[in-house]
Image (tube, rainbow, N blue to C red; front, side, top):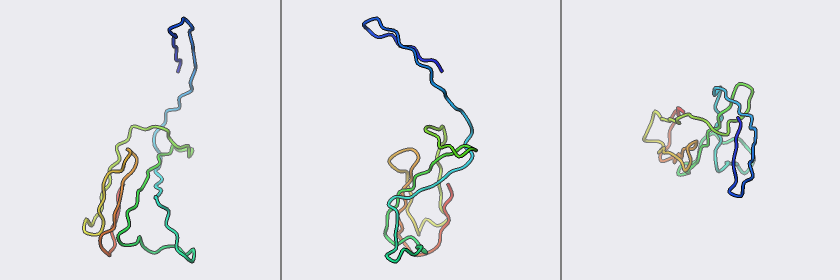
Length: 108
């Protein structure tokens, strides 16, 4: 892509930018805050009453992360009585709060 700009004082600037366009191949989801057990054991469940922010990262087939994408993030759970879920502060995030003990599935 070629960009040209003319400054008010008469100087012309030109820059060439390489733009890679490819389909989304997979998603990676990370949580914030990161949860640690005191003995460095793997947690078997998300603690009751905690609020977690999940960030969705979009990747192409070579593993490169997208800086921008035109994808609508949809999410759902099968049990609304165990978790509360809502959109996050930015487009690729959502927030979950655990409100009851049990198992639930999360679809993204």
